[in-house]
Image (cartoon, rainbow, N blue to C red; front, side):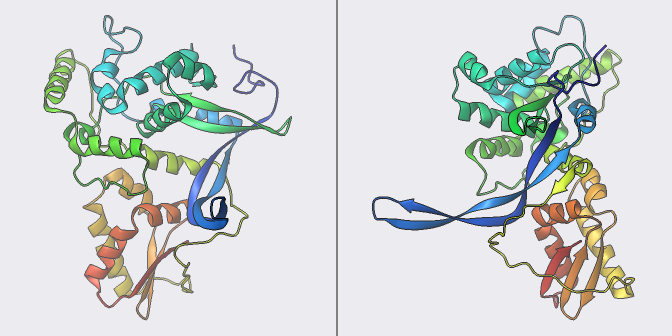
Length: 348
């Protein structure tokens, strides 16, 4: 039986697990251009730290999300054939190989590992930047999730812990059929842009037909399956951050957009505000998935003062997510209902 006193790396040291999250603000930096002795100003994203306890990291499981395919005798090679046949299109051969290397360390009942990436890089004959790019891809689809680690017993940074999905999930309908409404961010790295382009198109026709045949055979074999409409792991990870302790960045940041705070008294909404909120919720519910709507829009309220509208989020995580993901959607809904509103801000 595993000794519960030991940390996830099998030692007695007290470890602190954390993730860094973008605040939406930017820090100003300077660098010297040697040729003409000029200083160049540039901006980098400001980040906050979310700290998790040993117990929370142990409880976190990627296998809790999505519909997992059953283990059937004859279908297992090293990894389930479904992974090669259908997920391989989205995570590529390099992603498959990297997942296999990580999964081999999560033996027995373990769903975590702390691998030596220098050795994995050598075994795969891929550069470290390439390895990290495919880690991003695997995290995007819920196959791995990284926790940075600080050893508080020795006060030093250690190699990260990776939580590993042990079961292979069924591909969602959104990935099978494609989603043309996905936006390709200008600032996304090349490997993420490539992934989003595939998600917009869905599985190629031949693979889609093969996948339909596979699902029919599962149903004929009396397997009870449900193919999810979509699974946004970025959103799942964001929700899970609420179980950690948020450590705000102490640095003064240079924001590209000036922060505006509307001083609304926390009084009950008036009738016209209730009508506006109902319109907003109806508008949004028709354009995003039900899980996303229930997670981020359940519990919001709003106040209108003169020609200014303030969306009031129940907590800071919700506020940040609404700002980063749904600001345009909220703005479109409110201005469609009332064109006279000039300023729309999201506050806690």
